[in-house]
Length: 98
Image (cartoon, rainbow, N blue to C red; front, side, top):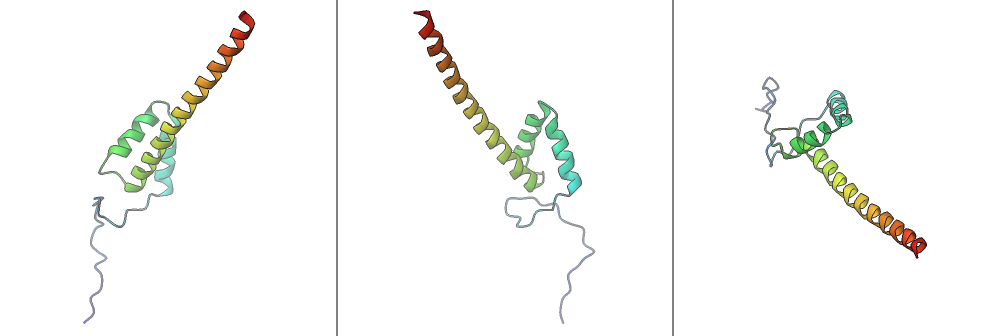
């Protein structure tokens, strides 16, 4: 006798490390996520919360981690460019002061 799957069982919310399937985030979930990212300061706080959360959707968690990596890279590039610009301006100003 062939067993049929039990479709009346409620979905499991086990987002553990070894769960192979994650629930799909709907378009509405992504719209709310993007609206939260518009708000200054709140966006960084929420990225950290989502990245550190073990109960949140793993898709949003991985996205938040990727976003934080890009933020860190952006900050490092900004610091390098600002240092190069200030160095060039200092050399430029020094050339006229002599």
